[in-house]
Image (cartoon, rainbow, N blue to C red; front, side, top):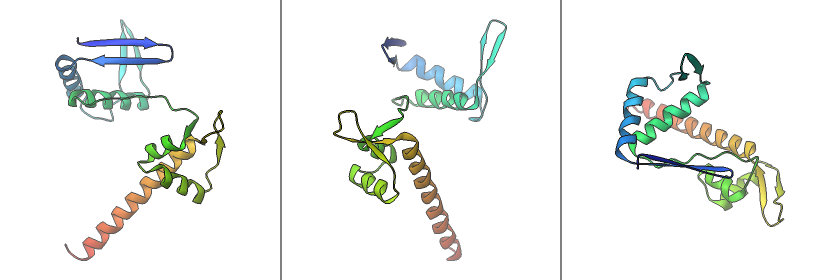
Amino acid sequence: MAMEILTQKDRTNVFVGTKEVRQAARETLESIGDVRSSLALMEGDTRIDLPDNLSRLLVSLFSALGDGSVISIETTPEEVSASTAAEMLGISRPTFLKRAKEQHIDSCPSPSGKQQRFKTSDVLQMRKVQRQAKIEAFNALRDELDQMNI
């Protein structure tokens, strides 16, 4: 099996065989060269330039396929549960709930009323702030080490 595509209702699963597809992905990635490349699709004489974000997605997919990685692509809902939000941030659910409360992140009840739901955009903003804090901490540590001449 080289590749099998199974489409159901609102979900598409792509099952990829190992050797041929991985090799094709590696070869394609090598021919692309720069990961910031803009890609295009060709159909006969018609050329369709892909937006940068889709080009980056495809280059990332080729890289992951070439490495033999497991790939999961999902659409992002407008709201997520606390567990999903915590997973997106790489922290525990209790830690997420604590940070959400500290940062005054609004929540609303789920349709069943049993769970809190959070706006995905708020969670992604938290992730952006979290990443920036890590970068700043790393740079501060690097500066400190530079001053110590280590």
